[in-house]
Length: 443
Image (cartoon, rainbow, N blue to C red; front, side, top):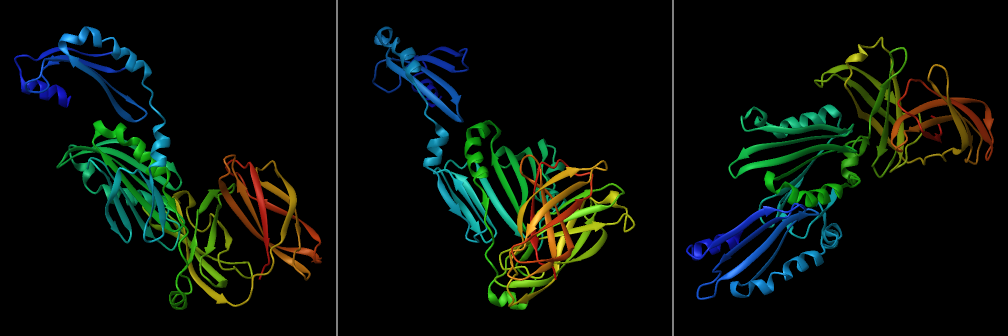
């Protein structure tokens, strides 16, 4: 189109526009005669423009108008022999790995993008043409951010835009329990822009991403956006330094993936992994389990004390809590927050875990899941008490619940010997496709 405009301006008297049409494949074909440069003979030009694999492609042929009849048959040959190679592979080969200075995440950016600004909790990338931008920001909490917190983060990012007359919402989706997305268009100082906002949680971090580009260029930049979004990987946070751990016995302990469901009889069952990201072993961990409504208001709270003897540095334990319907109106519960309120460092080593030898599961007539499993005592001494944790997964391999139960066995189990356990998980549950069991020594 630049050549077309230039030819029209150079010599309007000799310019002849011949056609502008779409062929059956969706290719736009433009043909004209014009003087392309001063003091040169009249030229004949034909050009095809189309979109393929996220790229805009232009293929043109030009020659002196007097020789056009001889040159024109070459154009369909050029079109037929044109082959576009795998652009996604090319982008991958020419992309750049980026790690945020905080160490919280990495991503991959196309070679044609660069860093506009970088802060302690955010980074802004832009393409070389200045038409598209991609922003990532992080916020840290002492617990896994809830769905309500993700929704609130999106509302805060939007501000008063939804009240503006030019605002048009295109999509508003809950991608999963831990990711929400809003896509919209609005008028800015540079014209109309389309923006996609995403909020998701990973561990104790809340991530916000924002991608924006002009609507007519959205498809052009979509592959770049997909690359950056699909390659955004949260990293495990580094342990707090020793002074921080001395000052705060709970720093570096956080919850992940809080799960809950309503069982028969109206009780609410809650579970969450608790990770020790300190450099020290822990005991006496206490957590506050808070029930919140859809406005984030507190409905009720209970406490949980770790039944395991010791949680080693870098290890994970599992909270399970049953909330009775007598505590509160559990139908109002929209989210659950688990916050660590106390813990103690210990120099003692974690006892050996019990070994899972195998077992089976069945669902009874009340839709309770009954697990019958064999656990082996791997310690060098006899044991009679075990904290057994049944990890339940759906058909996609996603954890749907962790049922922790302290069991006193009928008799001590000698080193190397096995014990048979029955673990009951109250139903009804979401789909259960597989399970695993871990065993730890009880206090």
